[in-house]
Image 1 (cartoon, rainbow, N blue to C red):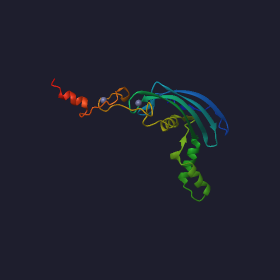
Image 2 (image 1 turned 135 degrees about the vertical axis):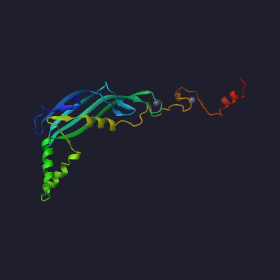
Image 3 (image 1 turned 90 degrees about the horizontal axis):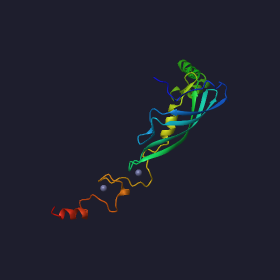
Image 4 (image 1 turned 180 degrees about the vertical axis):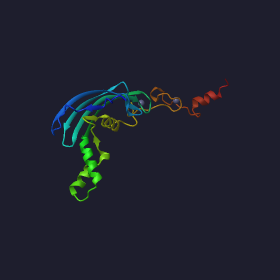
Length: 194
Ligand SMILES: [Zn+2]
Ligand SMILES: [Zn+2]
């Protein structure tokens, strides 16, 4: 499998707490990022202003994500565009921190309060780890985008949507438009002997 475009190599960042680097990334999207009705589509890209900082445990990554999601209005199905401008923060632990935690867990020593505290801090299920010098930004980026998208996007808050009878946009229909058989216009037609 091709290497994910979201994997970033932090080799230029010294492993010394406090060191910081900034990178401008333009990442081509191959799988839609977003929700059903609204997403950054394959062929588009996301721009990430990435800042990586060395901390004791690993690399702290913060990013500003910009891009353009496209989709359709949940009521009238008109195409809509939704500018993305979100941020994420993710701490990627050094793998060595992971193996240290695993060692400790194997020992299951309960006789030291410091050990317990370390175990709590290094609950592996909730942590994100580096692979060598690499950090995978895909999940933080996806989460930041998805969590901030409306599930039911609208072209306009007041979009009246479509007539259920004919599928036409209410905005294009004359006042009083209806498909009710009791509609006087239909009644009049019925009366005609065609
Ligand atoms: Zn609409
Ligand atoms: Zn209609």
